Image (tube, rainbow, N blue to C red):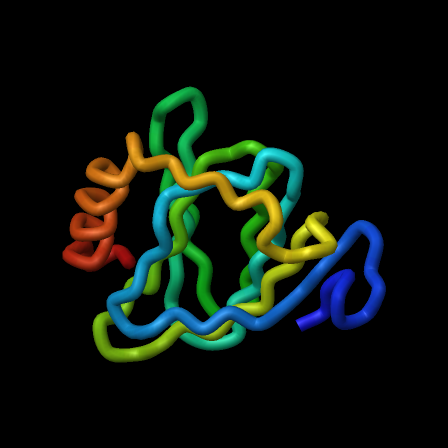
Length: 122
């Protein structure tokens, strides 16, 4: 991981993220940080909420996903048998300094995750 603590960065950080089979992050946002996620292996999706409406952004190997600062989102491993490995870059030099959980979206996120995993499209 490259952060202010490990490398003295001032405006950016990066690291590898491994999500186990069937994994999903808590619904959250980063008030001050833009994020880019690049999938190295596996099948992932990021659910984002624009004005309260969810949108699914599927991404797989060699694809990237951009999440602007303040946008509510949830990362999902679409597979129940394979992990996802991704590289994540943030404009937060500490990498996790500005994670704000959004418990009000958790039920909706879990329902969407189940729909995604059951869909033959994903």
